[in-house]
Amino acid sequence: MNTLFQSPVAPLLERLHREAEGQQFPGFVPTSDYRETYQHLGQCFLAVDPDLGRLLYTLVRTRKPQLVVEFGTSFGLSTIYLAAAVRDNGFGRVIGSEFVEAKAAQAARNLKEAGLADLVEIRSGDALQTLAGLQPDFLLLDGAKNLYLPILRLLGLQPGALVLADNINMRDLLGDYLEHVRNPANGFTSTTLGEAELSAYL
Ligand SMILES: C[S@@+](CC[C@H](N)C(=O)[O-])C[C@H]1O[C@@H](n2cnc3c(N)ncnc32)[C@H](O)[C@@H]1O
Image 1 (cartoon, rainbow, N blue to C red):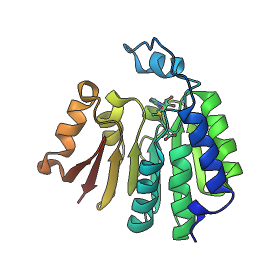
Image 2: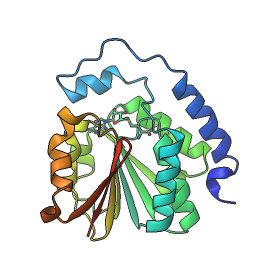
Image 3: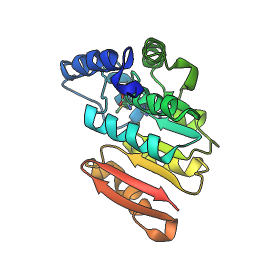
Image 4: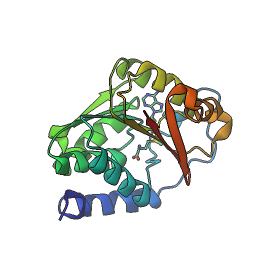
């Protein structure tokens, strides 16, 4: 059996998903500036659902990356799926990013409870600074939607890297990103899976 279906990860994920689903979303969300938006959502999970979580686990198990980078960690649900796969691969590490400090601290506690803290570094602060120059072979984009393309550009993606971008239904904020990864001239082969875009940098 893999780490995902065993204690402590399985019961922890079940509890965190239950909390996330039961959460009230604040009515008014300021949208003009991403810092304001996400500070306002500072108590909200905004987490991947279990299906997407298992997809992340499966992709990391099969791609077997050395370095997984996550833009937008929140309370660390997606990070748990990524790190569980790294644990089962037997090598690799995960670098997460979160600018709401209390969320980064809670994510670190959740990863400790999951028994995965030794595989994960969560960088507190704006990912535009904290992730610059990293060279991942697996990337999850789940932070501020208008920053997907700038974040992609400040990383040195490894050839063969996989990039999963969540919430691509937010077209007004993501048009430039989708145009970029869907253009083969930029080195990507890209496909849409529900609300996610999966792109390989070949
Ligand atoms: C959709 S949530 C991430 C959910 C998480 N991946 C999960 O599945 O549990 C987006 C998170 O990205 C964070 N965020 C947004 N823009 C960011 C930035 N520029 N740098 C760091 N964190 C950012 C927000 O504070 C928010 O917690």
